[in-house]
Image (cartoon, helix red, strand yellow):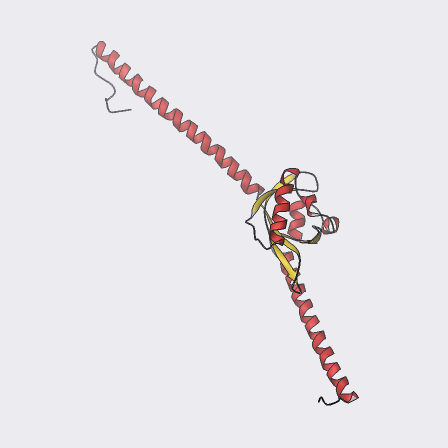
Length: 199
């Protein structure tokens, strides 16, 4: 049989539990604040989407990439950020993340506030709070400049390949002209100007 607590003892236990609970809340709020500070300072766009698809967190880099301020985009559906061509791919990414089926990064055209688009590498992961699934955490990196450079380099390579093909053609034409000049010089009784091996 349990011993009955005196009023004083019960009050003492209550005060200890209350103090421990306050410490835990304080620790949790410090951790949350540190995590939010980290998300703000990282050079990658990070935003959080709840299970209904509404944006509930939007960091500074995400604001820079999209042109939307945090106040303008919070509580809006994430489809507002996607171009019409990429909405299906965006929803697929969201649902894969919610099902804890971590997808690879995908390239999506992000629709900016000024209605222009930029290409971003986007990945998502589920986030849990208190053991329950609360939504997804989305990471995006603006790769439009990299894509522009890749396209420029691709065009340069194509031009080089075309030019090198033409160069081979010019070489063969030059070789045949040299042979023709040598033949004409021989007909005139003059010495050959170009060697046979020279191209």
